[in-house]
Image 1: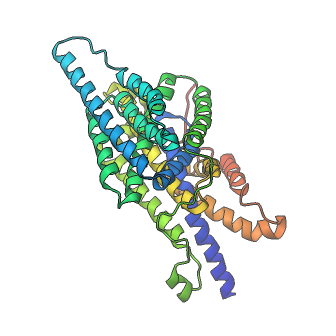
Image 2: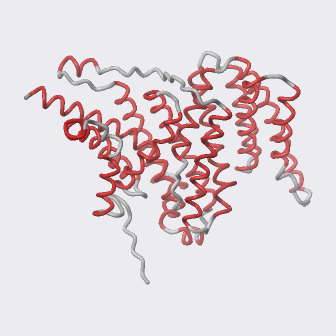
Length: 404
């Protein structure tokens, strides 16, 4: 009897910890839907792209970092020059005509550098990282002065952090994900503002396949082992004292998710941008009427979603290996937000806990005895469907009242 109870708690705790990892993916969906009413179908592709970028940053050689560092210096100087030209034209009261300059420079560099120098795939990877950074910071964010500073910081990381490969890879991947998210918001989704929801949803579906293709085209489609220094072994004192086999990695992943949620809660409640985001989530038109920059808020939200995707990619990539199936995690996050609510960050956590624990317990006590197993893949969707029938907005979602 005692062994059965211990086994039950072991399965339950393992499911809860897995559910928190589902919540990491669901958080990105909630953030974007809360601010812009867009269901980001591409969040799973974000997770795949982040994991692939990070693991390749750990595997590339010194040539990659050399090319990336020197290109970062060159583009930092170009960004500084663009910033100076813009200030000069403002002083002269002349029209600024340098908005497309970074795009042209990036295109020329992408075409000419591989032709002039036979660098192979490492060359393409270096060009991709630096060009993306330059393009996003100078065109997407339209802040060339910040672009110069960040690119110089990237150059310093490339040249002087040889002994801190993990942190260097994390910093570069974080920068790439943020800039890619800002570019997607500004280039793809901003022109579709005020369009029908189905158009935005289809755009997100197309974006999902584009990101998956770019990720595997620029990097590769192989399976990569990712080790971030957290062992996937049972916690020793729990195993010896209580006989519970709880993974150290799952506990660390749960702790990471908890810290991330706490940081997001602090950001939304204590910062000016966070309060602006809450106002935008309540009413777009009212937020615009009081001077809240809606477009900037959306850019911040997409960047935050990219950061969440990075941590989700690290956790799931370390657990399953970095492979194409990571992008399918967005589908498992769907019942999470159906249960917790599309607009609730705490709901994403509670929904993840419910989904994770339910799928594990159902598999052990119902699926294997009565169905021969395999219920872990579809039981969360059945649970989400039941919640839709009883609580259409989820446990913590906002109730929508429309007057005709």
